[in-house]
Length: 224
Image 1 (cartoon, rainbow, N blue to C red):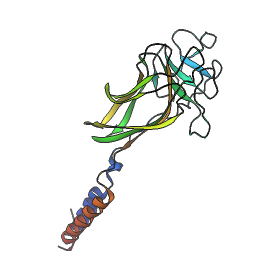
Image 2: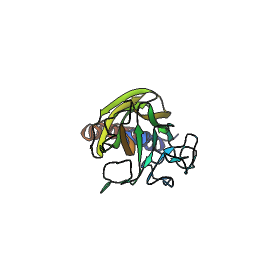
Image 3: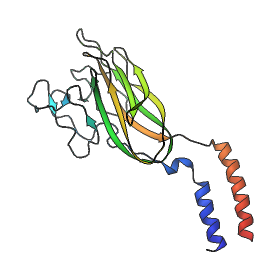
Image 4: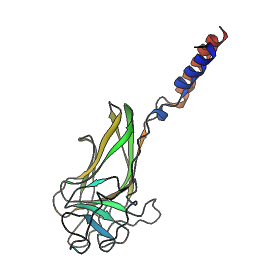
């Protein structure tokens, strides 16, 4: 291998930003890939019924492009202004959201594209507006491969709010992200606009110093 080719390969590897090595992609990050066609703006994941059932049910999990797995019995999707009383969607970057109603309600996805390292989960989270018989007093956990790394205790009338949590994976490939409601009873939370980004390390100033030193050493190699 020529010195010039080695110079090019080494500079490409060492000077590539760390974030470029791990780019996990959430399929259907805003829950909008499959429209809600059952019910009046909301539907549970089907657990034996269909669009004519009460409460309304729809088969989301097996629909191409949906990406997520919704738990049966307490999970589903809603749009704005539905009888499920979600927070207002005005000005938000999504028009559908998943709901978690009661204990063990969940939504999960096997996310590919990881490399070992630290990551930040970002999403919007809100709660049901109290309507006299139901409320939004739900606690939501975020889990990666079954391990809890974030917990949010909500009360009724919580608007959609951006939330973040950090986690680390030790292996590359696919890892399972899950959101779970843990409070028993008719207590509902809503979430949407989910993303995962690599934690930026080192900081730009440190990266600049590292790049300067590497380029100096590579330049000496190139001149030989």
